[in-house]
Structure formats: structure tokens, C-alpha cells
Length: 307
Ligand SMILES: [Zn+2]
Ligand SMILES: [Zn+2]
Image 1: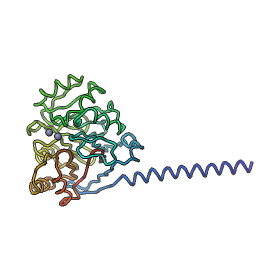
Image 2: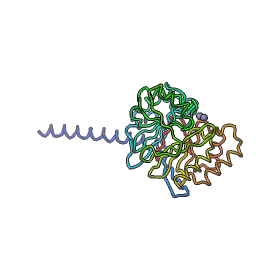
Image 3: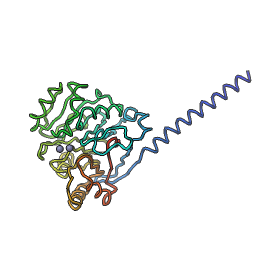
């Protein structure tokens, strides 16, 4: 009797040690991959938790296990020019960002090819059928190229497109079994999710606006109409600057002083975090990193940003 009691106690101790070890491993992973940044915008202080991908994080499939509630928003850069440091996702010239909102997954742009989008979504553990809407910023192929994949696996999903260019985009979307929804003016597409615009570049371009508990989040495609103009449009609509603006700023070939002027303007407008990716070019990143490090958010294929 006494012997079996001791064996049971021994087993219990081993079990508790193993459980503690696992818990410590998980929390260690979480601490390693997370960096919390507090910053002040014109409308108050906010906190963005930046999480970079790692080999360990993929084992935990954070995209499915860290679903947040209470209005929290998660952005995942699915495709960008800059590579995933872990080499798990493919990168290419183009843009695609997945947004997890309380209303479901919204895919903003689709990158340049169906195979890259498919590969990266699979690596991220995202079932494309969970995506409830696609928003296409503009008709350039590096933003629309992945559409055939989404439409094949999720026919009938609404695809929001710039209204005045829908004549070009709608037949292609129909051909793959999709349903295009032209947007001419800023439109609410679901709770807390708006298509902003359209504005003329050329071409016609729309942006994605998420109203999170922490404030507006603005996603831009290539910013052909101008990044400052798009941010101004967002402020006109919501009355407050975005806590985060992320996407292509179309500043390749802009001089250092031109990039300084644009960075200054964005900061003056009260933008919180600024994450220039895709066609933004290296100069604006350098300027932000040097002059406005508290506003600069570095991002690349595989970046996960929680707000
Ligand atoms: Zn582009
Ligand atoms: Zn473009």
C-alpha cells in the first residue's frame, strides 16, 4: 500500500515537472518572438505588439491559435518583396496582407501569382475558405496575380475592386467564378472594415481601413495617388490619423530629401506607426529609421503585427 502510494507520488512529480517544462518552453518562445512598442500619436498613447516569425512559432501555428477577441486585429504580410528571414514563405515583387478582424479574415491584395499565395497561406496554416472578402487595391498584376487561386478554392467570395477600373477587373474575376464588387466611394464592407477611396493615381486605387479598438489601421497597395493623400483621405473620413499605415508607398527613385518631406508630413498628420513595404523603396525606410525610429515599423514577408 505504502509502496504504491510512493510510486503514484513519484509519477505525479514527474508529470508536474514535464508540464512545467512545456509551459516554460512555450512562454520562452512567446517572449523571444514578441516585442511590445508603446508610442504616442496625436490622439493618445497606443501599444503595438510586433511579432516576428520564427521556426518555433510556426510549430505553434500562431495564425490559428492566437485568434484574438475584443476587437484585436492581426495583420500578416503574406507576400512582399522582402524575404521571410526564416525562408518558410516565398517572397516576390508584389503585395498581399491578410487581416484578421472580429468579422473574419480579409485578404488585401493577392501578390503576383496563385502558386506563391497558395504556398504561403498553407505555410501560415490559413484555410482560404476562412477568408470572407478580398479587397484589391488596384489593377496591377503584382496585386491581382494570386486571385485565380482564391477564386478557385473559394468561388463566390466577394472581391472589392476600384469602381472605375472594374471594367478591366470584373471579367477576369467572373472568369474564375468570382463576384466583383465595384467601390466608387468609401464603403463599409463589414463591421469595422471599410474600403477607402477610390482615388486616382493613375490608376484608380482603393485602400483598406480597419477600425480597431485602438484606432484606425490603414493598408495601402501601391499608393499611386500618393501616400500623404491617402492618409489625408483616411483622416477626413474617420477624424483621426491611422495608428498604423502599412503597404506600398511608391517612393522608389525618390530622393532622400523628398522622402524626408513625406516622412515629416506623415508624422505631422499624427500617424502612429509607419511600415513602408513593397514598392516603397529603401530611402523612405532609411529616413524613418534614422529620423523617426519611434514611428518606423520594419516589415517583410511573414511579419505578423498585432494591434
Ligand atoms: Zn505594386
Ligand atoms: Zn501598382
